[in-house]
Length: 115
Length: 115
Image (tube, rainbow over all chains, first blue to last red; front, side, top):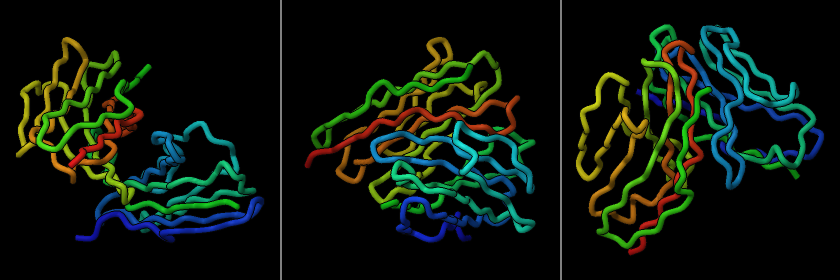
């Protein structure tokens, strides 16, 4: 069974541009989570989608946005890129969240470099 | 407020030594789940273990063992006879029942096993 898949693996953008990262959850998972991991820092929670709706949002500016599609895949958009947005962006998925405590499984991440 | 603390930022051990990674959590909830993840240099977080707050039995899986103590709000992870392949960043996480499946991660402990 395929795990969480993310694309692209690497992305290089110029400051001020927009970046779009994509994530496909494990089959049967309806929740998708996005995390940012900047160099030397821990995991910073970005967004959590469950069955198409945004359930929670971390302490990030509005230029970080996303959505979840009917097939539960998700997109993370970062507008007006800044140098400090350079990071590893990790997507994770889990089963339906009404059964809380479900394990979240991570993808391999997308490395975003802003120059 | 919920919080997970991994006080050890970096640990180095010589191969075959035992090493314990500490995790202390804070929550007022009585029902919660605790997790450990491993992040090798490749970037993907790998799920290691999940425990619920009602199960304080220690668990052993090969060279890995976990000690859960509610009295001290700790969920420590021990690697016995460490190997170079154990070199990674290890994250402890907390999930609360009343928040659906919101995860709270510690800042991680970087383990280096020296051959």
